[in-house]
Structures are given as structure tokens and as C-alpha cells.
Length: 325
Image (spheres, rainbow, N blue to C red):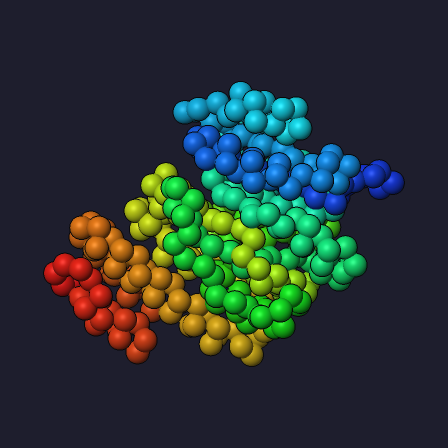
């Protein structure tokens, strides 16, 4: 079995210094199109600098310069930092954590949103829970015009700790980054995001936290994850990297799982990755991108063939608007 590298370390904050409750860290890279909406969604809930750090961290953008927009929209309230070189997605997240001065870190991509009440609702729940390592809310997917196109399933009907959450997050990604906040000390204890994972570093991180800390859930829909043509999610699907990176993530998660359940959980995880690939294939086929659709089917079947996968595959022509796979 290949030995995985250790996650990058996160240095602790200095002791005896007053820190805000929140650090809202907004990584961006060639993605200024939606940044004004993202900033507005945060500034509309701003409790002030004593309670919240707000900073945009640019990962050495080459197509646009977000700094003038930050200055205009932020009006001096939003800090701006530009990386000397491009660190990639996970590397940029780690840089955000290192720069975060707050007790709780919220990494909010520059094309995503939070809805009114996100920070106040979670702060009310978390300020008296020293045992909790992270918290997330129900979330929705939005399109380029902010219209909601899908909403995540309920994890539980009322706010509270999600019991045995590793059993769920260990086999499938259930949390989008804008819906999750993490105690900075949890990052300090467990390390940062794995930079060897191209699109699933957040999934592995949530599983790592769930293996060591209770995780709080808020059933209100308070965060939105945007899908558009320039998003990272779209690019990994078009490169058919989604399946391979999902398998790399499962390999990183496996040591976190209970030994007696690890085998069955990994098989279940591989099945979920295969089903997701078939789902992507359906969308690509409906969009008349037939070659990409077939590649997604092929990679999904290489990942896992189960009764559920075969049934889903056989239903693809029925669910497709044109033709047959």
C-alpha cells in the first residue's frame, strides 16, 4: 500500500492575542465575475471588524485583477492579499487558513454565496460548544443568475450534532465548501488540505475532521454553491479527472475508517463515484457532448460495477433526451 504524505501543517495563532470569532477568507483565481455578489452576501451580515475578519486572497490571477473591485465594494472593510505565485486550489485554501486570525474559518469561494443568517445562526450554536470541530448548513446549487437548481438532502431535521457522520462523509462528498466552517484549532491539530488531490481535497478534509471531532449541522439553507462553465467542478468533469481523483481521495480516507468497516465502506464509496460519473454522463449526453459522456461511462464502470451501477447504466437511454448510450 502506498504511504500517503502527511498533510501540510498549520501554525497556531499567537497566545494571548484577541481574535475575532470569524475569519471569512475568500480565495479567487481568474474569477472576478461573481466576486461582487459574494462580497455583498458577506458584507450584508458583517458584525464589524472586532467579530469578523474579511479578506480576499488572490492566487496570482493572470486574466483579471480583483483588487480594484475589492477596494470599491469593500470600502476599506475587506482586506486584499495577492499570492506571489499560484498555489492551486488546495494550496490556496491552506494559505487562507494560515492568514485567518479568527476562531472559526469560513472559506468562501469568490463565485459562491451565503444567505442572510449564515453567520449569526452558526455563531449562536457554536459559541458554547467547545467540543465541535466543524459545522455546516444545508446548501443549494445555483446557476449563473443565482437561481436555485438543487438543494441538498436533510442530514437531520433539527440543529445539532450529526451522529456517526464519518459513516456518511467517509463514502461520499456531502458538503460543499461554502456551507462549512471549521474551528482553526482543528486545522492546527489535523493539518491543512492535501495538495495532491486536485478536486476532492475538501472531501478528504471533512472526513478527517469527522474522524476526530463532533460536527454540527444546521438544517436551514444558508449557503449556495455556484456551478458555471468556468468552475473547477466543470473543468474536472470535462477532463474526466473526477473519477480518478475520487479514487485517490478514497485511498486517503481509508486509514480514517474503522478497520472492521473499511472494506465495505470503500466499496460503497467506489459505487458512489461510479454513480456520479453516470450522472455526469447523462448531463453531457443531454448537452450533446457524446464523446465526453461515453468517457464518463467508461471511467465509472472501471471504478465499480455493482447491481445498482448496472441498473443505472441500463436506465441511461430512458432518461436521456436523445439517442442511446
